[in-house]
Image (spheres, one colour):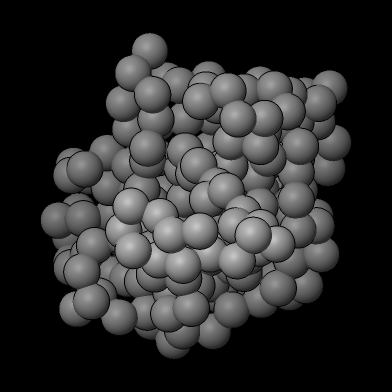
Length: 184
C-alpha cells in the first residue's frame, strides 16, 4: 500500500505508534543542533510517557530512565538500575512544572522548566522510603551555582554517586527539560 506521502508499506509491516512524551530531561550533547531532544545524539535522563494513551499525564503512565550526568562540565554519566517507573498520578503544578508520584506514594519525580528566572530547569526524584534524592539544577543568570547530586538510594538507583556544584553563568547543556503538557 502507498500512503499519502508516497511511502510504500508492505501489508505485513507493522509501524509502531510514536510515543507521546509529556516531559523529558536530557543532556544536550550538541547545543548547536537546535532545540529539543535528539535521539541518538543527546543523552536521556528521564521522560514521562503517555503509556495509557489518554492524552493526560497520570495513572498508568510511565517514567522511562536513561543515564544521570555526574558533572556539569565533563560529560560523564552513570547508568540506573531501575529503568521504568509506573506512575499512580501526576500533578501539573503550572505550565512549566509537573510532579508525578509512584503507586502508594513511595517516590516523587519532578520535571521543571521555568523558561528563565533564577532556577531555569531541573529534574528531581525523591524516595519517600529512603529519604534520598537525585537532582540536577541548571540555574541561569549567574545568581548561584548549578548543581548535580546523585544518590544511589534514590528511586532509579543510579550505579554511582556524584556531587557537583559549579558556577556557570551560561545555560550549561548538562540538563535541559522540555514539557509538552496538556492545558489544564
